[in-house]
Image (cartoon, rainbow, N blue to C red; front, side):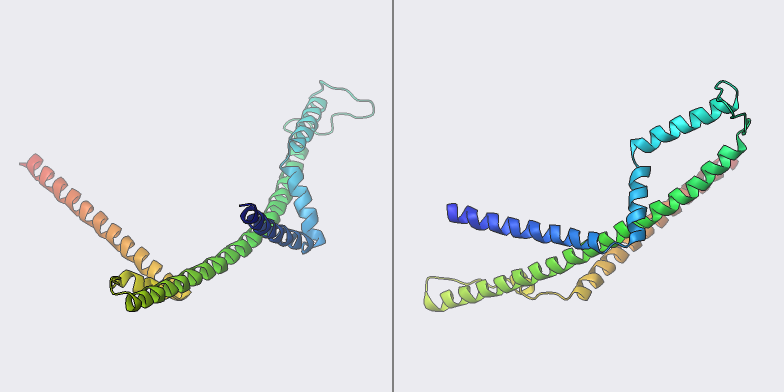
Amino acid sequence: MSDENFSQSEILRKNISAVIEMQNKAERSRTFQTRIADLITAFFGSMAFVYVHAIWFGLWILLNIGLVHIHYISEFDPFPFQLLTMIVSLEAIFLSTFVLISQNRSQELSERRAELDLHVNLLAEQKAAKVLDMLQEIAQQLDHLHDDFSLKHDPEAEALKVSPEPQEVLDVIEKTVNAKSKDVKRVAEEQGGRRKEKKSREDGRDEG
């Protein structure tokens, strides 16, 4: 039992190390501009950003409506605060740009992880097909060696024994989705036709 736990722990540590290494590699591959954009986006998404703007807007408004007086600073942006509006608009443009940069990078990382998941799933499916093939060979050998062992033909197992190609899977998914879409469209058209027919009958009764 201890050997089994030890082997499982080793496998877990190996998998975790691989994930951490992938993340570290992605971090090291970031350019200087991307690092700056990520830092700015992280600040924009923090409460510190909210506090800074609340203090900034509050002082700006109070100063320009005359409720706060600071030496050597007069009301430089009276109501409706056009200068403040322009600054905030420019800030919003840069903010959206930085957010898009970070989102593009996150999407790139997500695509890499999805591609890795696809490769792992394909490998697991191929291994499962190979294991099923080996089990069928063992069953056939047992059928030949033991008279009391009866091997039943299983068409589903025969089909699963063959590992499908990725393009074949995509074609089946696409055909299934298209067929369901056509069924939904056909049902909607039939319901629409029945509603029109019912409305026509009601209009005919009203005219009569």
